Structures are given as structure tokens and as C-alpha cells.
Length: 416
Ligand SMILES: *Cc1c(COP(=O)(O)O)cnc(C)c1O
Image 1 (cartoon, rainbow, N blue to C red):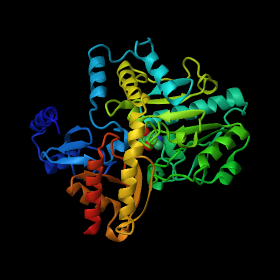
Image 2: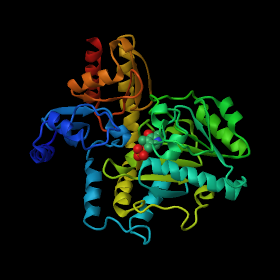
Image 3: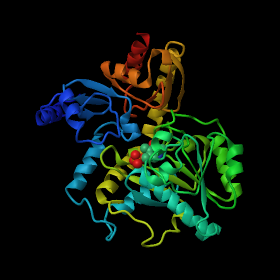
């Protein structure tokens, strides 16, 4: 890491002055146990590297589940945040702020849509997309009141609110949280016939991830997304693409749907839109759809705040040149080649697009959790998804050499 980062790390370590074990123990009685983090306590970070409280450096191959697409503390994003912190941070939407127009203009231009609705977290963008689709169904399509349905895919991950877990197929995410919100139909992913059978006159929208991240980076067959687009157009319902994890450069294109030249009616963005600094999400879509909202019908105290807009605009600016998208595609080849070499040597198979991969490890070698812990010992941070699958999503700023060294660490832990 560079000198300034070391200064920050030193300050941080001084501030806490507790060891990894002490800090993990300290959390136990006072922090809800809804996560099971790997045993590393991060105190500072820059680019693709994080530094723990013991001063050990690790390559971050998770990148905050794609919230850190531009790496930790990208200088342009940090500078934009600092500038804005010194001017104005929050107005609420009771008043206009001088940053939101530019954010909306540039974000909509980046993804080829008309309008945007600013929110904060991914789950809020999904909730907002659902509300807008229902409103569109009643106001524009003419679905009878309270009868609108939304078709979703099995093994989806769209967030954690009560409505969103209502259509999850992951029992851990659902059990104990009912009663559930009605109005959703679940069909198998990557199955156009099943989707067509689920669509009827009440269908407001199809809501899908163009690549299912949490499910293990499941890339659908070529033509599936185009087929969904054609089907939704023909049957008169909306296509909502949840690009919260797959979007903003991760797959080598601005959006994952760009690989099939598909333009959804609504795109949900989050994670990397906040530059790893503040939560920023957005529903971006056509005027016909987002135009259904009138004053008072939806809102958010923090949505579209000037700090979020400044950081979001700086994120869009990074993506406007196409450089990060190209870099993700290039480095994606290094990732794919490295993983291909490991197939049959501890890796059963993998799915990858751009700088994003789901890697199925031979269960005889350990669970995904155990492999993640062994990689941590080698200075590489990853996270398991289900069973023996690990997910790799490095910052798009990672160098080929850093990527190769991470793949070398994977080879080493699989060889044990
Ligand atoms: C992370 C994620 C969400 C939820 O985002 P939060 O910011 O955690 O609420 C929704 N959809 C997808 C595809 C995601 O990966």
C-alpha cells in the first residue's frame, strides 16, 4: 500500500488497540448474529488491498459483494465525497439540491433510460421497483385493483425486506418471517416456457437478475435474456432487471443485459453506485413507467441526498469512458484462464462473466467456508455462497499480477 494508507492504518490500529480475537469476542454479546464473518478485522484499505488490525495485508476478492467495484477509497470518489462534505450533505427532498439534476442526467444517459428514482439501499430499489410496476399495472395496463402479480425466478436474491423474502426460495431467508406479501409467482430460472406459463393478464412485471449472484454466479443460457425481453414485450408486462450486483462494470459491460443488447423497462442499481462510500441506489426506467409516480406516493428521507448524488455522479463519471468495463473484460480472461487450469485439480467447475465467478470446489476438499478460511490464511479474502461454491468478485482495479497471485493462493489451498 502507499504511504498515506499506512498512516491511516496506523491511526486506526491505535484507535482500537485491541487484537483480532478481542474485537471478535467483544462483538458477540452486543451485535446481532445475522452474519458469520470470516475471522479477520479490517482496519484500513486501499485499492484491492485491505489491512487488518494486526497489520497483515489481504487481497480483497469479494469487493463488498460488488459495492467496491472501483476498489477501496478510489481517489476520484474520495475526492468527490470530501468536496461535497465541505459544502452540503442533506436537504431531504422537501427542497431541491444542486447535485441531483446532474446525477440523474448522467446516470440515465449511462444506462440509456429516461428517468431515475433515487433511493439508498438495494432492497429499497427493489421495493420501489415493485411499487412502480404495480402502479403502472393499475394506471396504464388496467389490471383490476390489488390483483397485480410479479413473476420472479427461483433461487433469486433481491434483498431482505419482508416483501422481498416473501418471494425468496431460500428457506433460511424466509422461515420465521411470515406472513408474506402475496402477488408473486416463482418460476425456474433460465426457463422461458415456465415463465410464459406464469404470465397472464394480471402480470405487472417479470423481475430477474440477469446473472444470479447469490445463487453462485449463475449465468443463463445465451438468448435467455433476449427471450425474456421478447416475451415481456409480447405479453404486455414490464421487464425489471435487478443489476444491483451484476451492473456497473462487473461483467465487462456497463450492465449485464448489455451482453444481449437487451433494454429493460426498469433497471435496479445499487452497491457500486455508492462507490463503497455511502449507500446509493436507484430505479432507472422509461418515462412511461417512472412517470406513474405523483407527489406523496413514494419517497425517502435520504434518497437523492447531495452527498450520495456527488458520489454517484463521480461513479458514473468513472464508467462513462468505458475503461473500467474494458478492464473487467480483459482481467476476466485472466480469471477464466486461471480457473480453467484448476478444473480437475480441486475445482469441479465454474461460471464466469467479466470479473465475476462462482467456483464449485470439490466438496471432498472442504466446504466453501473452510476454503475461504484457508484463503484468508494465505492473504486472500473471498466468501462462500452455497455449499462448496465460492464467489470471486475482485475490484475492477485489480492488476493481472494481483489476480494471478490470488489464483496461486487458491491453487495452493486446493493442493493441500
Ligand atoms: C445485494 C443485492 C440486493 C440488496 O441490496 P442491499 O443494499 O443489501 O439491500 C438486491 N439485489 C441484488 C441482486 C443484490 O446483489
